Structure formats: C-alpha cells, structure tokens
Image 1 (cartoon, rainbow, N blue to C red):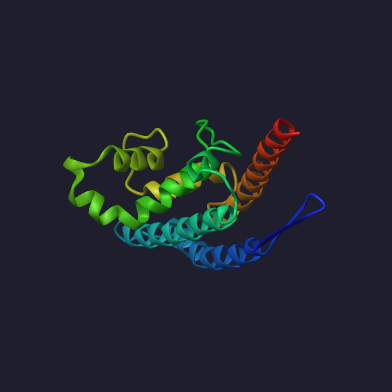
Image 2: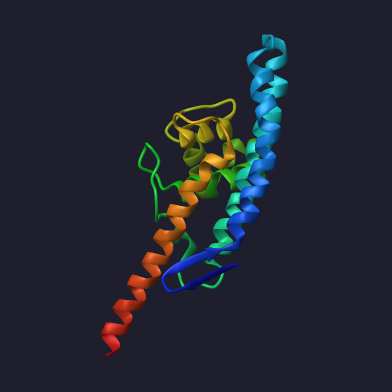
Length: 183
C-alpha cells in the first residue's frame, strides 16, 4: 500500500519486499561461499540453486512493480521504461519485469526455442542484457544490476525507490498538464 501526502510517499509494500529479499539473500550468501570453495563438479548444483532463488526474487520484485501501479492511470509498459537505466541504457524496471517472466516461463521457452514468438524472444534478449548466451542469465543480470556490490537482491532496492519516484513524478506532470489545459 502506498500513501502520498504532502508530496511524501509512504510505501508499506517496500518494507514487505525488503524482508522477502533479505530472506532470499540469506540463502544466497552461503551459496556464494559454497561456489567459491567447491570443485568444478559441485559448482553447477550451487549455481542452479542460486539461479532459482534469484528468479523468485525477480518475481517478488515484479509483483512490487505492479503493486505500485495498481491505482495509477499509467500504461504499465510506459511505466517500466521510467526511472533508472542499466549500464546498457535499458530501464531497470523493464529488465526486472523480463527477468521475472523469463524465470516463470523458462521451461516452456526452452521447449519451443525454434518457435519463439517475438514477445518471448524480446524477453530473452532483455534478460541476456546484450550477451549472446548465458548459462545463468538471471545471475548475470543481477550481477549487472549490482555493479560493484555483492550479488544480492537487496541491491535492487535503490533502483525501485528511484523508479517509484519517477512514476509518481510522471503522473504528477501528466496531471498538471491536464489541469492547465482544463483551466
């Protein structure tokens, strides 16, 4: 739930999201350590587990994106293009949305790889984030978003705060333009 008063945003959903991402990160941290200390034969299992948890995290973040937009008059596609951009100049909200969709639909995407619809191919291309291929695309994308920081989901939170502000600024700008035209 988001309440806006006196140009201040009170976002209760951000607290819920933070708790879930911190919980997932508590599972990711030992996986990172295990990967560093494992033989080549053991690494794949740890990477698969990490990829799964990161996918869950992106889905939880995607729900947050939709929660923010719930009662706003804005096209979700337009909203996903607002806010911070990645190092490759792609909107972070768009990348997260695509990552969540990729994780949810990956099994069916791989089954019908030759017959992908343009929308599905776009999702894969966005998740790859200019790579031509990746064994663990969600982990790679999270690494891109984390930059120099640890590979943790909570490192996406500042992007979300900035995105939310950009959405509300856009809504206010559209409202003010509409109001000026009416008066």
